[in-house]
Length: 170
Ligand SMILES: CC(C)(COP(=O)(O)OP(=O)(O)OC[C@H]1O[C@@H](n2cnc3c(N)ncnc32)[C@H](O)[C@@H]1OP(=O)(O)O)[C@@H](O)C(=O)NCCC(=O)NCCS
Image (cartoon, rainbow, N blue to C red; front, side, top):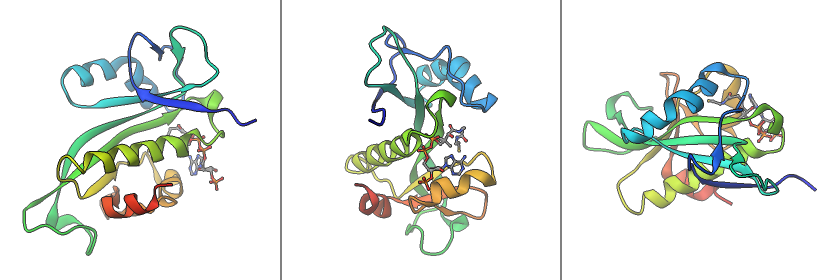
């Protein structure tokens, strides 16, 4: 049976991030050294995946993503991606997203993206949001996000209109 995961708001006393290794040093460093500062300063919120069969306390972090509010310059957006009479378009930024090496290949990456999209769609009922944004780490990762409908912004960013995310959610 494929491994199943719970994706929960990060909690430092119940999620163990000390062994987290996704193979990308900057994303390992972020979760181990920078996350708490970002949360304290209201710069990001983190969501943590743990295996449903993990009975340890704290449970080992298998993957994570962060969300932050964001805005993009209307004039720099590709045609048709957003509509705004204002200089900026409100957005949600998926700042970081990673799966621990020992859990990669179990479709947890896909589940994390879907979870981030669902939270963004839910948030857009509470405040204006037109776009979901990802800063991809490199060219190789583009195909991973394009499956969800993200398009390139021309500035190396990936954009997904919230309306498209809503339709794409299972
Ligand atoms: C990229 C990452 C999140 C994928 O997580 P994962 O759990 O291993 O991926 P999944 O099992 O959910 O794979 C889903 C699909 O994405 C593909 N995929 C996985 N990693 C990929 C990558 N680096 N680039 C492109 N496609 C990738 C898989 O082949 C699979 O394709 P399929 O649907 O055609 O079968 C994970 O490998 C990771 O954390 N990598 C290091 C950090 C990173 O690159 N983060 C992205 C920051 S922008």
